[in-house]
Image (tube, rainbow, N blue to C red; front, side):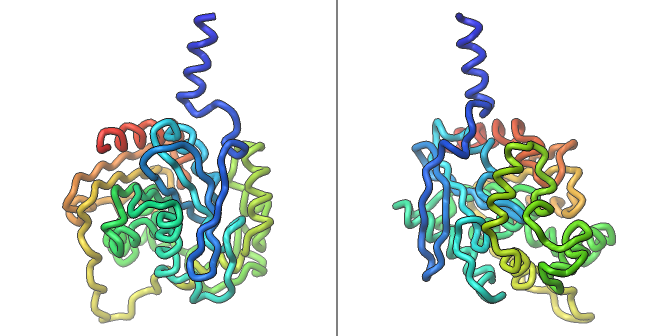
Length: 305
C-alpha cells in the first residue's frame, strides 16, 4: 500500500499523471478582433506560455503539469495556429500584434502582469514583450531563442549560424505549396508534426495543424525575421535593458539556433540571469529535456515568489 502511494506521488510530481490535453480548461481573449485561444490549468500566480514554430499550446504539457499545483499556467495558441484567429496578410503577423495577443490574454484573465515564457518564435515574442511592456512582465523565461542582441551578432558574424538560418530565408521567400519548403515537401499537417516522437502527442499535433493556417505560420518569418543587413548600413539600436529576473534554457543539439548566441546575455540584463543548458536536447528543449526544464522552472519560480 505504501509503495503504491509513493509511486502515485512520483507520477504526479513527474507530470506523468493523465493526459493534460483532457484536463485543461479553454478560453479565448480578443485582440482587436483576433481571437486568441488559450488552455489553462491550476491556480495561483499567472504564468503565460507562448509556443514557437511549428507547434501549439500542447507543447507545454509537461511544464503545465509540473507547475499547476502552485500556479495558474496558461498556454496560448499564437495567431494562425490551431484554434486562434487566422487573419490574412503578412502585416497581421508583425511583432506588435503578437505582443498585443499576449497582453490581451493577461488582461482577459484579470491580471496586470505575468511570468512570460516563450520558445522559438514564442521566445522572440517573450523577449519583445518584456522590452515593450516591462511592467506587465513579472519574470521572463526563454527557451532556445537567444537574446536579440546575441542572435543578431551571430547572424552577422557566425558562418555556422548563417548556414543554420537558411531555412528561415526560405520561409521568408516561399509559400506553403512550394515543393521543398518543409522537410523536402510542401507544408502538410503530418510533415509539420514529423518532429513529435510520442505517437499519442503526435495525433494531437496533426489535428491542431489541420486547423492551422500554413501561410500564417510563414508570415512570422516574412513580417519579423531580419533581412541580411545592407553593406555599410548602421547597426540597429540596442533593445532596452531588462530589470526583471530572466531564466534561459537551451538545448545544445539545436541545429537552427547556435548556442554561441547566449554569450554576453548577462551584459544586457540588470536583474539576475540564470542560464541552463541541456547537452542532449535539441530545439524543442521543453520536450526533449522535459524533467530538467520543468523542475528547474518550478524551483526558479518558487524561489522568486
